Image (cartoon, rainbow, N blue to C red; front, side):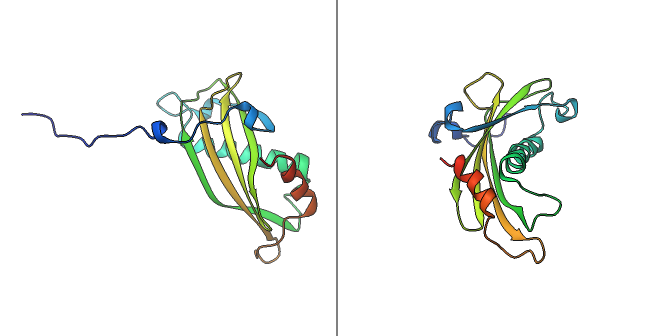
Length: 157
């Protein structure tokens, strides 16, 4: 008896846009992997990549944009995100997370992120993350505060 046939799988990397390199990102944050990031297969679990995205974005917004996560009038909600996994990462690696702004609207921003193994120019993962800024008091969209907007403009590509 022959094995069941399986549908042909096409390589999504073959038809995708060219991968960004380090020079495409104006901001970087070194993020050490942690023992708990690895899954039973010995590499960083897929959901942890989103945590790295969130970390590089919010580190930048707090340090460079003055985001006040406790008392600020405007807060950013993630309304959409995506990750393209290209190569495994594993503990004990250090990841260089690259960040840029691809689109800046009145109350929303779309960031693009790439996770590079330290010292490498080819990313292990790329993705995007959309924040909509809302008023803390009523959760309604609100214009991005000027200092935050200015920090986003500085990394806009």
